[in-house]
Image (cartoon, rainbow, N blue to C red; front, side, top):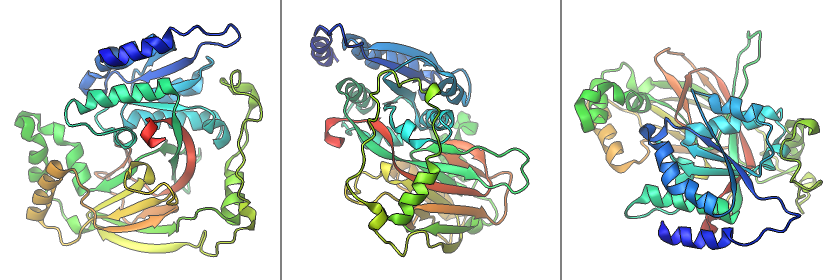
Length: 393
């Protein structure tokens, strides 16, 4: 930490020309994250580096669940970046607030860089951006994430839109946006309620599998119809559809337009209108009956090549699960942190229709719990500008 402080202070001591405004970042801090340790960790390892770098910092703490959405939608202070100090759930809230603020105008969303400080209980996106260390991995990743913001290195990443399907809704339900995964299943539900068994101490997660393995129809826990389209690198159909999804922008509400030059949007040199892909937008149907379902973005897959097209990976859990298998595989997951899903299908857009909606079942979007209901899941490729380390830029 001392070494980083000495390096950053040299950068911060450089005089700033009078015609250039100091950099300003807005921190959305979730003090309840990391078992209420997030604020202290931020103050010890992230905030000092930002100040030494000469960056103006505004810190806004969330007060309740989904408060980050309201903060972003109401914010009117000019800023150069939004930094999420929390976990994947806080990041999802910030993205949801950002897209809603601009009425789904993705071009405006792309203009605002997002920083991710891994201060949550789950940090799948942050872990994909930064190195893994043998010791003090969490602390070193916090410092690396802060240095990425200071060095202004970023890359474009995918985002997913989760839109509830409701036929008889008087008021349309708004979409949720995220960058990681959507989960539904018996193991996920058991893992989520593990804190209920707090009296088991460090064995509470194992106890959750023991006491929740008696559920009926484990092999049909996720009984649904999946309709999906295959991934596409870009074609005339994609270009036309994305232009319609971009919506419109209200230039009067852009709170960062004061520091972004006009007409900065870069245009691709590829003319997608001349590319024909007959497979694009053809709907495929999959009837599934399994114990677990995960839908993940390419963001959390480090092994995927840079040239690979963006996609959503549909991971379907194993079949033939009984009580003993449920407990055994759950324990293995806690030790290895590997997915229990076996079958994998790649897709671009998905329509998930559960055949039977159980009130005890939930849908988890970036580890945040939502009511299980039919949803449309759309991949928004390269839609978010995210700060990252030099090796991942």
